[in-house]
Length: 82
Image (tube, rainbow, N blue to C red):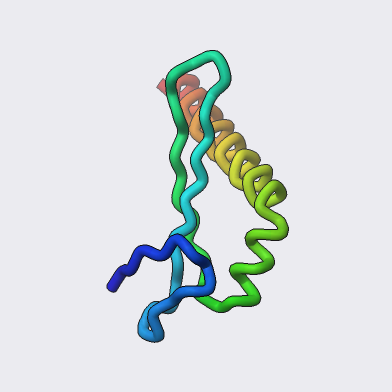
């Protein structure tokens, strides 16, 4: 079940998680990057997320970089084995 709320204080009692969308507009380009992060629907968690959103974004970017490096390393290893 999913609901869409613009105000964080609204919530449905049967929902356990909330998707928070992070949108980044690239300067000088007409592109945007969209990412959804699932967090639990507890008000304390939502408040923490709002207060630390910059750190969350930084951590998401680091995770994407690490995943890209792992994919690149795995691809390079496969190329050496062939």
